[in-house]
Image (cartoon, rainbow, N blue to C red; front, side, top):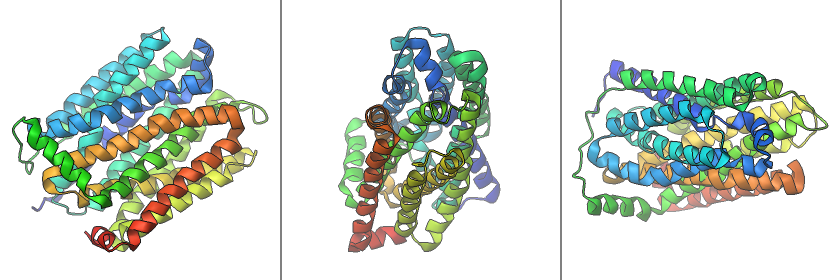
Length: 398
């Protein structure tokens, strides 16, 4: 199926805006974790639960909502999900009990799962595969813009108004993006809805699980995102503590490193279309490890350079891995395969974010870095092994 340029442009803009709002809401507390920890008397690992609860909710909600989208429609699922997530984002700052806050963050994660799990399938359906790598790269670029702007606005405002003001600022941003997303997102044309019967939908899930090649991007998603969230959860604690002693507002500027991800995710999508997914994916993972190693030095400029390299490498790898799932999966199970990728991605975020916080508390930044490098090297080894297998050659050319 072909797609005209005007429709393709509108699809790209709407998904970019939706991704921006989703990621701003998803990580709203992250830049104010030190203030939140002080307000509730928490350790870095415990405070990180406000981030991990949301990504856990997303991981849990991704598969059922991805399956549900096969029956009720991709657009309806994404719109309803983001509207609910934005509403919860505006309620969150008024909550003063930490367990209730964590519970609402869990619910918000389930809500945004409808967009996160369905977007790649929607793009594959509505573009007919035309320039899918480039389009998926632009969608991932939207996630980086959302991650950067939400964290930046939240961190700066949180320095002056506390964690509640920081989270409220991000909530308003998320609501504005949601309104634009609802107006701009085109109605679907290509998707053939299935009846809401769980047996055939579960059959699609089995189909998505039966392809061994897809386990590689799933593993990259889990390990890569776990390392990524661990770094950004702990970064504020490291920058504001001795010997660096950076103020919270200045520490929030570190999230400008997300701009690197905006650039590399779009470039990686094009590179994957031209040179193959596995080669581009291995390069992205290697760059991510280099960035981690640079951040070992207790020097602020070097840490910032390392963070830019780390962020760029990760988002390049993520753009390629997520696009690989959309292109490889069988058309009858594309929603389920996309949901499985999101389950791995955000499940890794939940577990990795908490483990990283406790590793930092126990072993310091160097010990945490050793752990995260091990995760990334394991992901790279899986990609390399699959690349040498004959079946992977088919996948890299599909």
